[in-house]
Image (cartoon, rainbow, N blue to C red; front, side, top):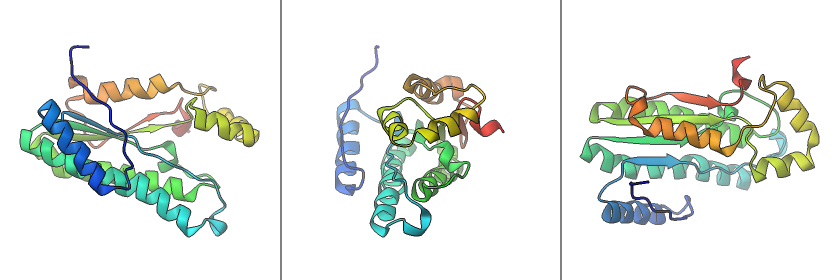
Length: 199
């Protein structure tokens, strides 16, 4: 690739670390054109016994951390008059199923945050979209399905393509939303789910 990039790992619950990463990115790269907000932790538990600590941690990471990153990056993009923010939501933010209330609430919040920021920042030339992955063959999903094999049958039987997605499927969607091929698209949620949400 001819473009410049760098990779830094931070805790999205640490607002100071987010600010440092954004400022360092602008300093080294001269600006920020694309931000993929892909923080996400889960935690399966019946709602009635869903712990307060787990609830707070899931929302702090998935929602508050993602908003803090979008806000700081968005400020730079507004100044430069362009940019694309891609938030990673989940089909869990579009449909409901039992046992993961905190995760689903957090990803539903990402969907609404995406729409709100798109409406607010669009006039400044900043696009904000979201990707809602379905069940993707990540280590996390495969590990979960080893513990709860009935989940694999449940989800795949309701997925028209009847298979797990690959991480590259989500990456391809992000490349599209980051590129000029999607220059007239903002405020949208692209489900990469094998058709799960089509039913």
